[in-house]
Length: 206
Image 1 (tube, rainbow, N blue to C red):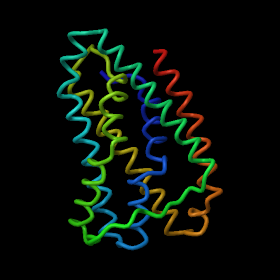
Image 2: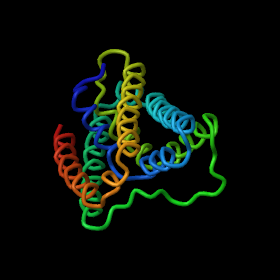
Image 3: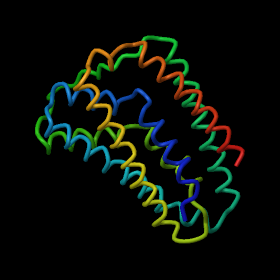
């Protein structure tokens, strides 16, 4: 069954707040794609989280039930990943943080186009894959339905991330100048980096 749900929510929220491909995509969609495209992008991004967690759950059940040592290795690896993300975030805070998304050809519009864009961006995001494989498993115990618990955490992961992106895009629509200020993003990066380092150390220590 899932454990430490509040910590899991905090961790996934911090990961969603990290500047990256998904965040840049959401900002681009709210500024250029329109509401239908943004909704499709949010749905596609959430679907990607569910697919990542389901894939992790498919192999996680056997690992947890057969090898406590392997589970401990996953837990330590997850903590290391969080700490590495924290260090990278702090490094990013020392430079100018840009919310401008990378240029892409053939921008898709409409709900279906936004959905495909959000899904492909999520599935192509190594951060999501690494989190699903090495971090998410340490929030699940071997007691209870491991597969269903992992998928449930994946659904919670998708919900938390979608909630953050909805709040972010709302803020962008209301006050573009404030959200895009490098100083505001730098402060967010510093705070996020420090917290990720602490969480990573706690996860690795069990």
